[in-house]
Length: 351
Image (cartoon, rainbow, N blue to C red):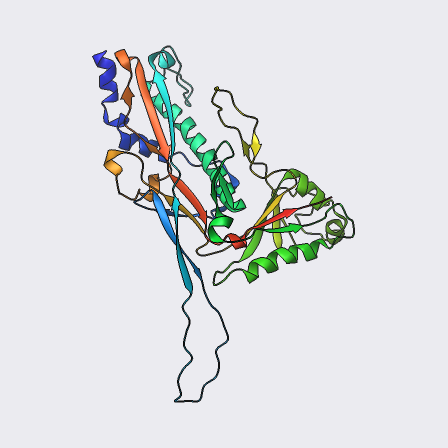
């Protein structure tokens, strides 16, 4: 028994080392992560306050030289506080898990698995669960309503910022629909609601059902009928993205299940429901922010986490009774926030 406990007292099993190891595993899951929309901002608290300001823009009148200038008006400011979600996750490594197991060697030879090797593999699996959870939260922010794993609402951004969600019906079942005009409805609405923000383009993530109707619509097919360059929806698989009407469209199939109270997995839920498409701006400066709060550990109280390992933290390993193994605790504390939800547009098709 003392020998086993001494293994976990090595520096390689410290919280700092394990957090460093898990931080080296890239977050390979999720299109939202790949797009790099959310700027990371570590904070030392478990909530953030955002100042919502309705600026006043008006025309400035001319004045005679030497006369009094027109006076500026103050925008109305309203602070809003948002709680950062706390996402703990626990697993364990037992002696029976490692005993007699062969290591996954890449050089041809394979010896017996080490405790550290097994722990690291377990941490990789746990990190991937955090990664898909983060994708779900970020996709919720892109839709304006952040939901927990069971579908319950954590934060309604539209309600918090006093914004009504913009919905555009593309009516893709009607051959005469002006799809370019519908795209201009989306981009024009965003441009009108920048309110001091900038953007370089508009991107759309579409459910497979909506995307298929879109690329087979008569006006889309006609637009690419004599278009020689790729990608061309008449000749190539354009699900990874193509431009039409000033918007880049791509198919999005992200989905995940969650563990229910009885220990069974739920039916996988799509992050974008069937028949929907979500539009959002690219190239903004201060619209998409991912706040990272400190973990629930003594040594991290009131300290903003380092950007390099803010996504997932690992607690010191906790020995089980009689030295049978170790419990592993990881946690993530992310709040993806869209500070201008008026720039988020939902697209549908009523036929």
